[in-house]
Length: 341
Image (tube, rainbow, N blue to C red; front, side):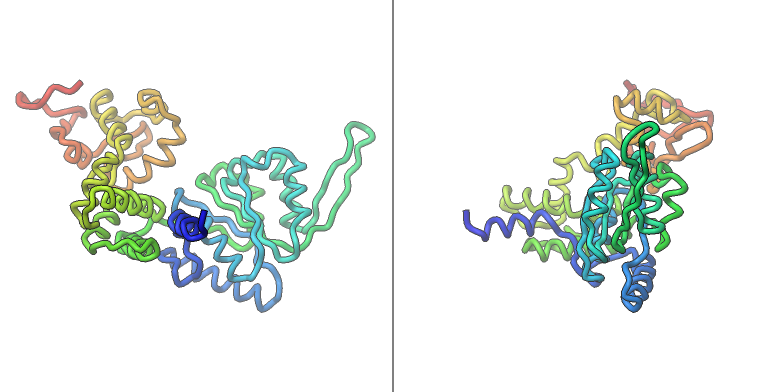
């Protein structure tokens, strides 16, 4: 196989920014990191440990790679579920070189024993290992080279307080992007992929992308595929047809999003209802609903969290084509409304 198709494949599969100038959005985080990294370079010392959190697809991993590039450091990546035993983390830490960056994704899935090994490693640069069991067990300390730990998580509340407190460089929350920022990201990605695209198509993708760069790039690729197979230009109409095929509506809601709202309206009279009950009705995990679906529905004003549970708003009734809710909850009496199953 020739090298050209392989290069084109990897170019297609990764649209990650490689410089700060290419990284669009999150300006408050970039400003803080500029100060942190500049000071670390002047001291000829690795940056302090950093924690990034926020919904998936907003650029936490990209920030870690940009920091490594900025510092001229090697980055070694792993994830919380991949570190199962103390020996795993010990092997990773002892193989670091001075100035290396260790990136741990899904850090909230680290078990407590691993966290306890990380405390002294992050704070004093020492690895404490217990050899043996029972009365004959002994503890040894191994010095570690200076390194930077960058952790990323979508659920910061699941990280223990002692671990969170050891990220001396800062804890940063990544925010959702604006439509304008998503439009710039789509335009850049289309240029990298050499995909001719109209401004109207860029705006349509940005509007439906849940304010998330990863999703915007996925929709761009699927619209490109649709345009290629149908032999059509990549304009607003093509994007709409492609996303309709994916069951993505005008607000960027997926079929699961709409199903959540419909279940609350049809079965629970618009709420309030607990997330556990919703998950059971959908045959879905609670964490999936809380992490993937709810944030976007709440941000659009279609769903509310109350002390008693989740409640659908009048905007959701309107978007799904239901008659307005009655003041007492549920659907208003209307002799012409359709029967809801």
